[in-house]
Length: 558
Ligand SMILES: Cc1ncc(Cn2nnc(CCOP(=O)(O)OP(=O)(O)O)c2C)c(N)n1
Image 1 (tube, helix red, strand yellow):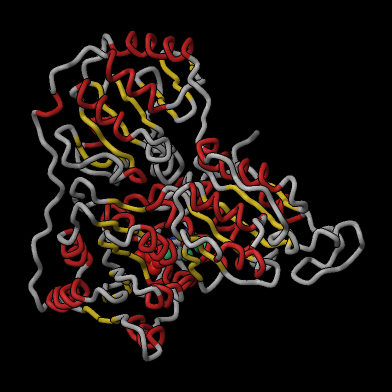
Image 2 (tube, helix red, strand yellow; image 1 turned 135 degrees about the horizontal axis):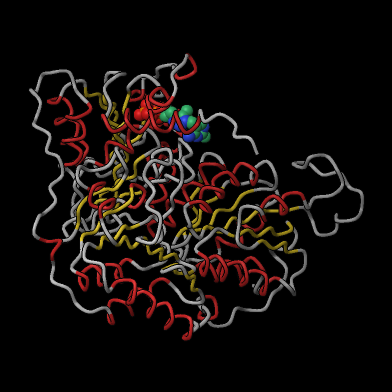
C-alpha cells in the first residue's frame, strides 16, 4: 500500500504521543478515518456528537499533553469549534481535523451538501482561524506535509488548538513520509540579554521586600513551569497561594502552601496574605471577572511582579523573548536564599464533621465523602456550577489533579472531558462532579464511558436547577426539567453494558454507593446525589453577589 496524506497525518499524531484520536463519521472524512485506522499505534474513539468529540479531545489533552478530533465539514466542525474555543481559552493543544469538499469542486460553482448552500467553502477555515493558533487547508498532496507539520508544531509550541481541513479526495493521495518528529518540538532559543535584564530587575525588586507571596495562575501548567515554581518557592521560603482556576497546579502538601486566593470566596487567610504582602509574584495568572470576584480581588501596582508565559513585568519595565520556565528556574538559582518564614504557620483546609448517616444528604456531607476519596492518582473533573466551589474546599494530596474549565465555562464540558481524560489516563482514579443542569447538555457521553468500559465515578449533583445562576441572578429560567439520572444508565447499558446507576439521599446511601463505585471497574458508576436546591457552598453566595454587581454596572459615559 503506498504512503498517503492520511498516513502522514496519522504518523505525526502518533509520533507526538497520541494513542487515541476522537472522531464522528461523516462522508467528508470517511476515507481519512480509514487512513488513520491503518496506524496501529493509535485507537480511533467515537463520540456521540462533535461538540462532545471536541471536549473529549480537550480532556484527553489534559491527561496526555495533546489530542486530535476528526469531524465532517460544517455540520460537524462548527459544533466542534465551540469545544475548540474552549481549548483555546484553556491553553490546550487540540488539533481539530475536518473533512472538506473535493479539491476539484473549488471554483466550479458547485453547490455541495453540508455547506451553507453557496459556492464558496472557505467560511469554515475563516471561522477556525479566529479560534486557533494555526489553520491550514489541504487541497493538494505536495503541500500536505508542510501544512500538517506547521499546524502540529504551532499547537505544541503555543499550547493552543490548531485546525486542519483535508479535501475528501486527498486522504488517499500518495504522499512522502515524515522526517524526524523532533522538528515538531523545536522552539526558539531564549533572548539572553532580555532574560538577564529581567532577572536583574527582579532581584532589585525583591531586595527590600520581606513579605513575599507567590500567586499561582492557571496558565502555569500550559507553560510547563510547575517544577520551576516549586523551586522558586523553596528558594524564597515564601508563602504560596493559588488562584481558583489553578487549584491543584501547586502541591498542597508543600510547606509553603496557604490555600486558594479568590477574594471573599477564597480560603480564610489567603486574601489577607496576598493583600498585605509587600511583594506578590503572580505566576501566569488570568485575572478575569470570575477569578477576581467581579473585579474585587485583583492585585495591582508596584508590589506586583507579573510573570507570564510570554514575558515578565516588574519594577515598571516589561521583558520578553524567553519562556516562563527558564525565567523561574534561573531566578530560583540566583535569588538569595531566604529562611522559610512562611512555614511557621501551616495551612489546614476547613474540616467538615460527618453527618448523621440517615440524615438527608447535604452538600457538605457530599463534599466530605468525595474529598475523602482523593488519592495521589486521582483526577477529579469539576464542572461549571456549585462544583467549582465544592472542590475549592477539598484538600488535594500531592499528585492529585483537578480539571477545571473556569475561563471558557461551557456547562456540559466536564462529561466528555472526563471521558477523554479517562481514555488518556486509564491508570488514574477518574472522578467527575457535575450539576444536573450541565449534565443535561452532554449526558450521552456517559454511554461512551459504558462502551469503552471507563470506570469513571460520576457524582451527579441533583439540586433541581441552575443553582450557580440563581446565586448570580435568579428567575424562572434557572428551573429545569428533572430527569431520572441514575435510571439513564440502564438506557446507556442497553443490556450489555456495565454501567451502574445509584441514588444517594443520605450520607449512608452515599457511602454505600461509593463502595459500589470503587468496586465497579468495568464501567462508569453514576451516583445521583439528592441535594436541596438552596444547599450550596457559602462562598458561592458571596461570589455570586459580587459577580451580579459587576454584571449590573451601568454604562459609563465614554
Ligand atoms: C453552554 C453554556 N450555556 C449556558 C451557560 C450559563 N450557565 N452557567 N451555569 C449554568 C447552570 C449550571 O447548573 P448546574 O449544572 O445544575 O450546576 P449547579 O450550579 O450545581 O446547579 C448555566 C445555565 C454556560 N456556562 N454554558
